Length: 329
Image 1 (tube, rainbow, N blue to C red):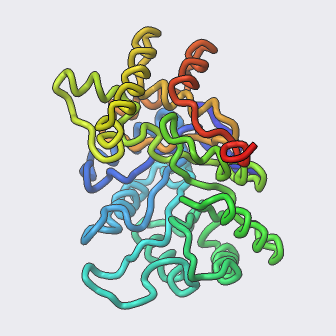
Image 2 (cartoon, rainbow, N blue to C red; image 1 turned 180 degrees about the vertical axis):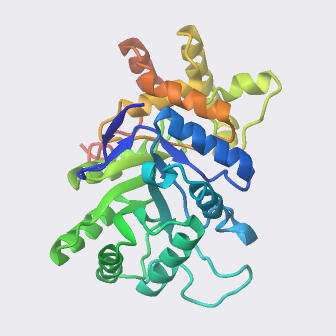
Image 3 (cartoon, one colour; image 1 turned 90 degrees about the vertical axis):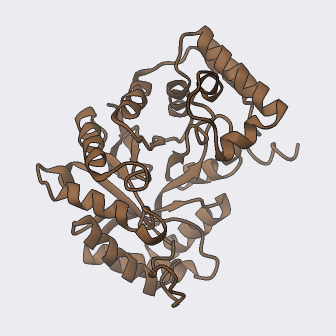
């Protein structure tokens, strides 16, 4: 496994991030524990989760599965850079009582304590804002975060799904307070979805944030979906299905799969390897449902794409380019 610094911090993290969203809803606890053990064995030290994972009446379940794994001992917790998120509503299903979601100081305090209990740990390494909260000023958010840092409950703060201007606003507010500010941003970014290159990634680079792309295969679109469908495998759904439903989108994906077949490359591994070549990228989040999917993702770290392949990928998925050139001269 290869490692890099997380943004401007001194923290070293693996170039793949283990996403745990499937733990509970898709992968049972025993298999989830096996995947985490395998991740550690391959050198992945950066684990990502969120308080709402498990979803619906089972929200919080994913953190519990990770906590039970930590409780097995064997230095599991010490070896892991643990990231979780706050924002989603954690009130009991059907309960409309206020202040159980978003980023008020009240909810941040409540949510971090609940996550620590489920995770069976005394601290969270990177505590991330899962979404922008337009109702809470950053002065309040940083006051809450600084208190948690002083208490030793968290070490760093990160963002997820923030536009570029909110990254700037957050860190300018932090600078005025003497707070450390955001150290990472999780954003939707992959070959087929490159809008983050316009402002989000440049803002992250300017402020020293590591960039952690989520959905690096665009919901399976970049994992060889057309060939899998033809072979009777799992059909596309969500964003992938929407893209394939259009003649232009399907032709684009077909060209992508044909290119990689020509060069003897696995589509999913190539898509991850491409992300690892991009400026400002710390490492993509991979969310394996099985140990085999994890093994495939790990191979991508050692995969070096040729200039010919990289050039062809740019032709198939050109992206919008940086701003303001993307929408102006």
